[in-house]
Image 1 (cartoon, rainbow, N blue to C red):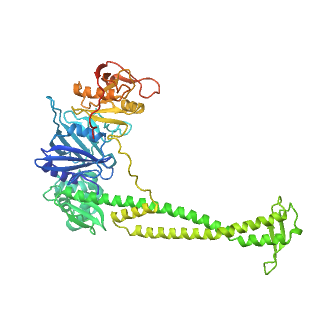
Image 2: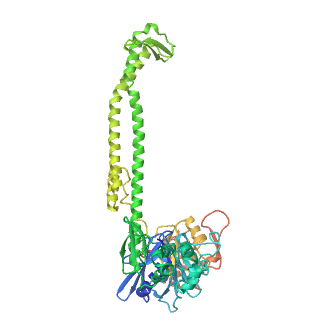
Image 3: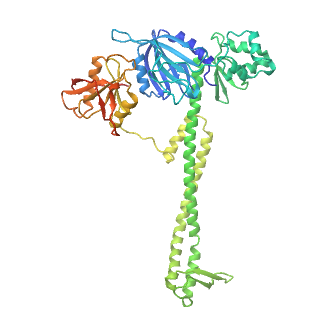
Length: 570
């Protein structure tokens, strides 16, 4: 079951009880679409998972962060704007699968920053995580950027105003009385789950099907009332439903539509969701591991089969060893009857009980004697190779048998640990490559840009090369970002991100960024380097295809000593 409006409604109630008034202490990214927020309230800390996965988009509380801890630009951006901020509001927007968490950031500066809001949209492949300025709904950044070429309904881009997805005209399930409900869906015998799904807000296919599944026992109106009752956390009964150890759903109630499923009850919807997605993740990890091992076996089987085919072909040629000897003997016995230039000769085969005539191919360029010796050489070589080929065939057959054994083990492996043990054996046998160890640790923040955070909390990006500089200016920098470069000296572009469009950048940040520009330039050994800075909107790429070359105006100059922060932003 997908994460539906009911699940979100119950989770929102839990989040309000647990997180309101709490402080965001840490943000980390588990994978490209999932983030974990550590939020403290009093002496307790809680972890909130937000995921924009195309199949598993969701929000819920977890006891610990999801594994992975992969930092990214967006994780850094969220940390810069939200860390130490206070959670002031948590709401579900209407009956949509959209969660809004409002945060009041803190700052060491006299002027406090405006409140921010995290918008998490759980809509299948259109799922997204968006940070907005809560005062005017201006988008600051998002996990997925959507422009006019991707959607004709709305754009999700920094600087644009956030708007809700297109709304459908549906009725509020909590305000429907029996008369209105009956008028809406028609006769009980004719009702279908699609009618409920299409006409009642907040109803997922699972909830609509559940109403229909309960009709034979209770009648349509009572079935609807039972399902709607679970929209109140006090009447909900969070469940994990399984069928033959396969996760089916995390549900707010027992589902009559899957009568053969086993169930496990939980105190909260978040606990049921955590258990469900842990089971789903385990299932997917096992499927991925099984797929990898199966592909390795198939590849090895194909290699062995090709080797076996080649060896059997060699053996077929080797089996002709006795034929080569007989042909040589017959040629030697009949040298007087053969002349140079013949392409073949027919001789009576004295070694056959039937004494039939045997046609023997000849090399017309060789003498009769040389032709005979050539057949004796073929005989010697074929006889010598036959035993070796048979040995190699036996080796291949043993390897094939081993593969059949591993195929049986793979079929029987029903836990991730069993599959991982098989992987270890596959590596030891050479079916899979061993994981590379001992590699040098990659530079923190590896990627197209070096990333730093200033003492004032601004993100500073440094290009790594001319292509990186070009990408930084063309794709990353916004008009109100600050751009810096060593004056008339070859070096990296530096951008100070300014998503809030502040009218000025604090001098401590400007000096740090200028020191970076000086450090990542040809003048990094100098003690006093001039660095120009101007708003990015005054920087344009020069005509031509030379990456990294720009023209800029309205610049000012700082003189700084090259330096780099003690540690990079994580």
